Image (cartoon, rainbow, N blue to C red; front, side):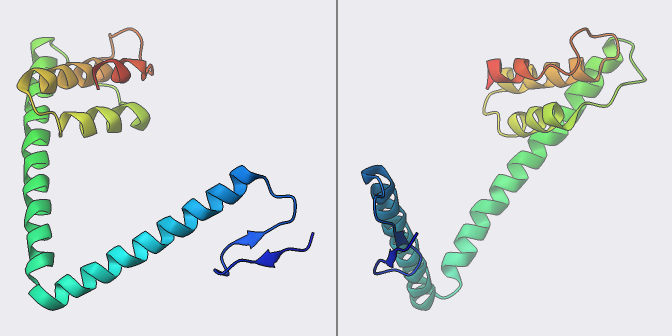
Length: 143
């Protein structure tokens, strides 16, 4: 089927194309333009302020990383204590689809109560005696 290129070579107008498809193309074009403009603005701010903008973003990222590392260490301690309290020394591996979600959520939990719930879930997932292994739906209830 033949078509004509619109003003941007990334988008092809096909005769008989639905209005929804045309609208989607227009949104994509506008989004692409917005991303380009934001990139240009970032470059300009970098010229104005030098490394200050990059360093400022880096500082925030560092604080977030530090916060998540602290939460991960606390998670490890809570899980180890719970397993020890249950008398469990030999654990089972947690499937990544469950373990990654649990650790990810625990390291951004902003309350100790919520963090403890994620620790309990991870403890149960590692407990070879816990029924219901491999069921990731329990992660959805807390988050």
